[in-house]
Length: 433
Image 1 (cartoon, rainbow, N blue to C red):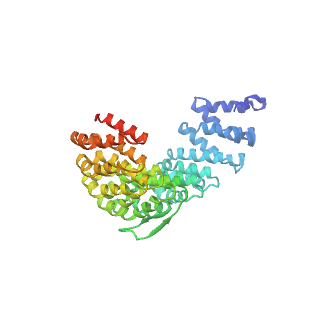
Image 2 (tube, rainbow, N blue to C red; image 1 turned 90 degrees about the vertical axis):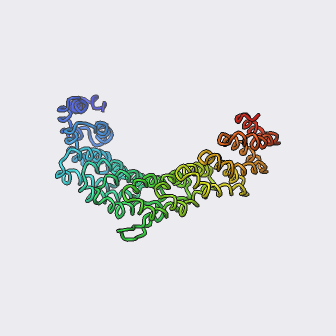
Image 3 (cartoon, helix red, strand yellow; image 1 turned 135 degrees about the vertical axis):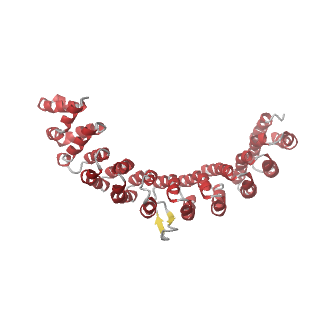
């Protein structure tokens, strides 16, 4: 706003602008009340490019100043042109702040008309601002206005034509659901929110006291999908595991096979928590095969995450479960014609040995590792050496000396230099020289 100081004709305006910065609340208040005068003197262009950005930077102020600012902003549309979204962005931010100050009876008449218009504004930036501030707005207006006004507005934001707006709204789903009135929370979520959450799958089957109904969701924006995935634990908290166990499976199956690897990765990372919520029986029946399929995914990051996922599942369900359910399937991959899948077997053994313990590792996994030391692919053989080094601390000293050491010595004389190197390193680390 320095340009105002260089024009003598605008000197009084410069004084008013300086007062906007003043530490004295009353001076700032007086200047705020003369914003229309300042805008007229500056003209449309300078109001757009200088005054509005300046006001945006000073939006965080005393309550009395904010109220005065909101009152003045109502006059700005004709001063800067109706297409100027800077005013409407500022109005949204001020409106949310002001909503926290007003008594409940004044919110409907003084604040909500502006915010309703903003939620349907032609500018996606304004709608994005509303979505981004939605949780703050919800807390400010209370349960009745939330049910009557904010729920429909939130539905529209979740279905917005712009991916950025949908993503911003999706990121607020968890907090919005948690702050819904308890007496109507489940109904609102099941009938109003989830039907708008687009995740490219059949996502909810309304069960129990609700009418059974399939709702189709579809969205090509990965940010929206990933935001919803990250908030599924909140959905469980508010509608219960019984509904989730019957309604969530179709979504997981679809997303587990999604074309975008980041979506698959998000589901994998969520799986241990999901398994703990759904229980071992449901997991074995419905989700176990998905976890095994990820181990042979064509993307390395997925295979790596799937391996880590198995370890976390064993931590939840126990070593006996692993021995009966997971270990046989992992070891079966040692005979896969694809050497990358055979290597995944070794990576899984590395991860599982510690959580499964000495007995399962020695009796079931170690013999497979020994067998793979004769693999025709050098990459597999040197990963055998690395696996033996990794699982060595789990084994007893007799096993190390009588079984592991001879295999490593054989690998140390391998024709491939990498196999030799990793075998010698394992011998040194395990003190078997």
